[in-house]
Image: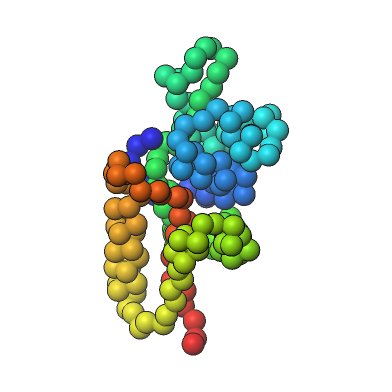
Length: 186
């Protein structure tokens, strides 16, 4: 997996990555690294054929690629993400119904993860239960300041996302982070 950022500007690629199962497959490859369709099927409770189909859609959109060096024989196909970070903005798709639908799907996904955490938090060790956080506030920003805030948050998250995990024996778990700026009236 490379450490690069892929800016999504093609609505067909956006549609490919917005499908709920394909998004989950991309997340698994991001968190766990390369995998076969069989491995991904086991993690998603899907049929191998269904996962294979969706991996081919992701490959056609150049969101994943085959990792032939990991295969033990000619029948085995390993997949990896072609870019570690995928980034897009609705402004790149003015009036495009695919982008509008993708934005709603992303928001639904973010809310579902937060709701799942709330429902499951008591199953986590006590020291982890108080870790997740929520921040929301209203600030007055110019358009340029909003872009600056977006970039600064992106750079901060990238520091954690791209670091090499220290071999210090401290437990680290996958943590979902989402940030969103929306215009509105308080």
